[in-house]
Length: 147
Image: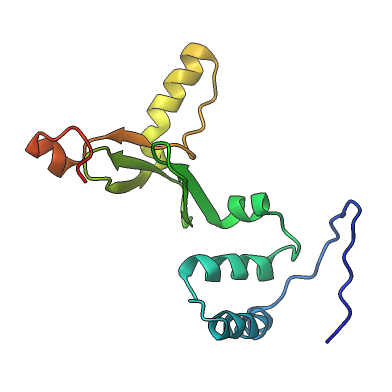
């Protein structure tokens, strides 16, 4: 086993040479093996994070990883929910059944533009959800979350 050095000062970023797809695959397999050996599952989220680390600066902060591969949102007063981001999108949450619907960010553009024009405020809709009733619950006349 090699020597592990922990630097306690401020880290600076150095340009790193990008790995080829073959090199990334060679480095990814042992890590996936360790996850499996420890009884873990190789989920899409884990795979996306590992691939991101191998493709970019190898010492990334959580915030940098989040910006590159993850979305998180807050539903009600519960914990944040995280998922892999493949494109920019927004979330609609049914307050009756809890269903989460992803919609394109472009659907919110008229709202963002109107708020910017009227108030001079730049609205970021990526980390919150819009609550209401899904099509099915609205048709049944439900309004409160059913357990």
